[in-house]
Length: 225
Image (cartoon, rainbow, N blue to C red; front, side):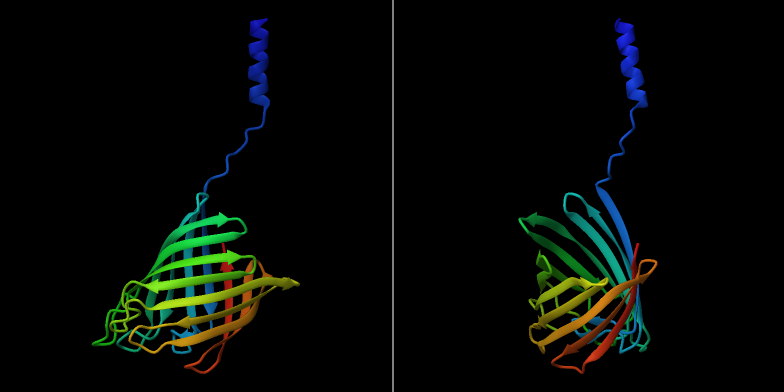
């Protein structure tokens, strides 16, 4: 009897489907082509196109790391394109219907720079809260901000909106204020829509403006994989 029961248990175990455990880790990549790279409302490529991309790692605990890079045109001593390379990490957690996000973002600008310019590498700490379609975020520079002398302590509060408005279109809106210690502070805003068009590629069209520069249009083609 015992042998029969044991044999039955073994047969049941062997015939049962093996359930694959979901990994707590995830990695995604992103790639984009834009007609102009804007950061906080200001062109970083002298109104020229940019190729951008990065990778993100996330753990189910809420911790994440990522890196992203793009060409820029405002630092190279020869006037040619140079590089912006960002590295960031943080922690996300849900508190009721609100998702909180705390982290740090390091901007690196490798390569030659304009003679006499202050090192543009910048470290910011940030905190954000997302509820439904809205995200409020506050970034604080713990170093000089992008080469502005004695600008440590600069900050950037912003409010972002993103929602599906039907037919696959995603509407987006943004407003922010760049406060620069010992520099010129300004406001910026952006409005636009995006839509996935084919094979996971998303096309976006946006209006970008500030109160210290002329308005411009942004066209983007991107893919997440």
